[in-house]
Image 1 (cartoon, rainbow, N blue to C red):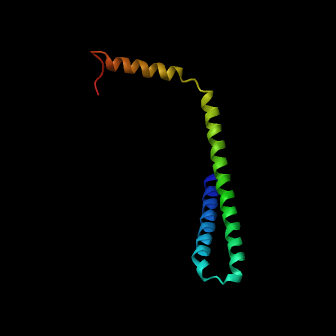
Image 2: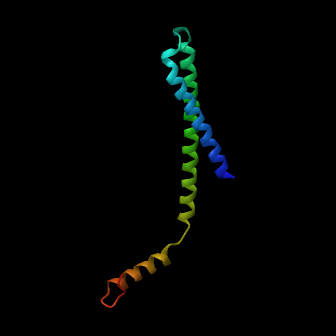
Image 3: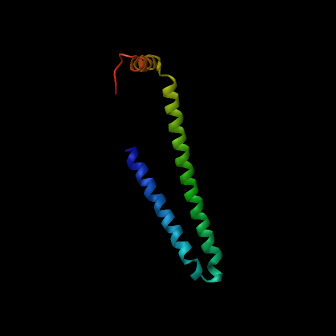
Length: 98
């Protein structure tokens, strides 16, 4: 469900970018009297694109903060001890060889 939403949002964002590219490609052909309105439309599109990107960055930051919060509660002590023990055995003369 979440992946579908993200995929849909990305498609919408790509559509806005294509629309902006289309406007940029036609700027040379726009009559002077329509140029201000055309540029205003481009600025509006840029604002929408920026808002969507900022929302995605904020969501990613929130997910990262949640992951950090979860990981801060995990006790890695036993894992670290086992890893240190394995490394000591590998360094010892009779230890396992790769």
